[in-house]
Image (cartoon, rainbow over all chains, first blue to last red; front, side, top):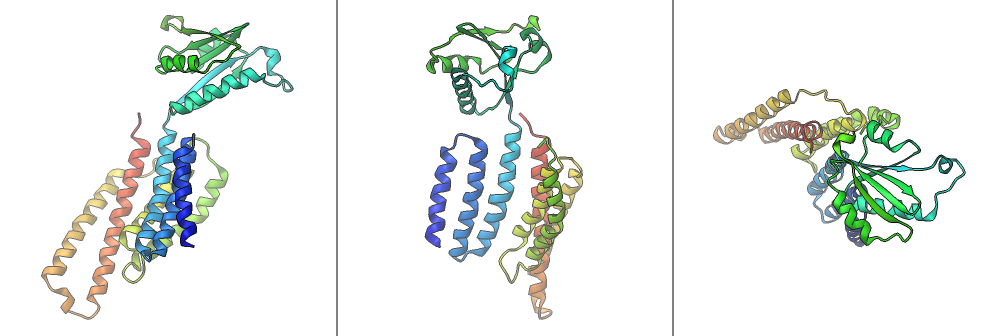
Length: 180
Length: 128
């Protein structure tokens, strides 16, 4: 029994480090606390086990989750043609790749991604909505509009130049304040 | 937590009294079984913390809770000092048990208040 619990400790701790998403890491940490409180119990220290189970796997898990709630959400608008937004239309492969790499960028920067597909006009989106990035495809170039207060924009530029998508040429546009 | 989950609300409503009972049990039996003031207080404060998950509303007067916590610390110090200086344990047979239960209750109150304050302070006032 003890060996199983000790193995579980190793597995959960490695999983908590290796996972890409913070929420999963928090859950793995809670599992780790539960397992280690069981180990304390088997080493006949029930007092410590009780304290660890309560504080480690309840209170600190909730604290971490609430802290994650205070994160900023990175909102990306993806402008599509109205024919592409049909029910039966499937996303083309290069688009999926692009979105996947954007999500990778966001999880590297510890941001929550929120991708919104819309057919609205770009000016309208800029005026009406809270956004961080707006993507628009024009033939072979992908135009990326960034909000003037978007301080991750330079990091995004260098990230996209490493992750080459053969279909696209990038054009970066930083929206000026007075357009809004 | 912006979405009010019906499932979470109902479940928490059923679970509250049991968690509170468990906390009181841990505090009161601290001197003969595993547990004690600290663990019981943490369980009691986890009631308030779990309430935040189902209904994120500020319903506590943090200042009043802080006052209670300070008085608990003061009374704990007074209790320990009196117990040592007055030789109370010679007065009657079970005085040691009464002393430990009383001290556990005060510690449990203090820990519950302190953890609740820490959590609500963090959840409602601290932000980037």
